[in-house]
Length: 162
Image 1 (cartoon, helix red, strand yellow):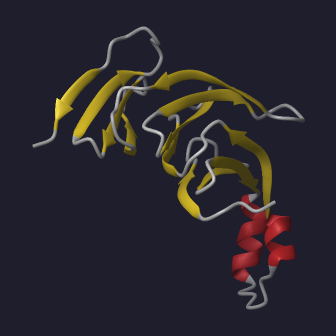
Image 2 (image 1 turned 120 degrees about the vertical axis):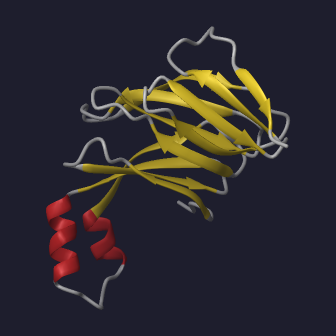
């Protein structure tokens, strides 16, 4: 599968073993991958100069592909929660999605919980507040918005960046 150009990346620091990471691509796909920290540590400590695709595929395993956006992924970030697995994906289509799911099943399942459709230009950044339920989005429309990601009907606040 041609993944396209890598346009976004986030490492989940809420689950340490195994460790998950997200990769966003120019074709709009987001791939959730996992690695075992012991296998990675061994690989790094061996200082193997002959790292190839086979070794990489043994350590890093793609476990889920999220296909909701049709254009380049511009930002992505894991939901900062130790008990609920989720992430936010932003694209050139001027919207973002909050996705939640379960990685403990044999085949991980995810669903869209919330769609952020409040910007006129692509969303360029996303950041979670330490309280974990609030999220801020920056956009090329020169506005940033503040959302309660857990209360879907909550009206977002907009701020002009001058």
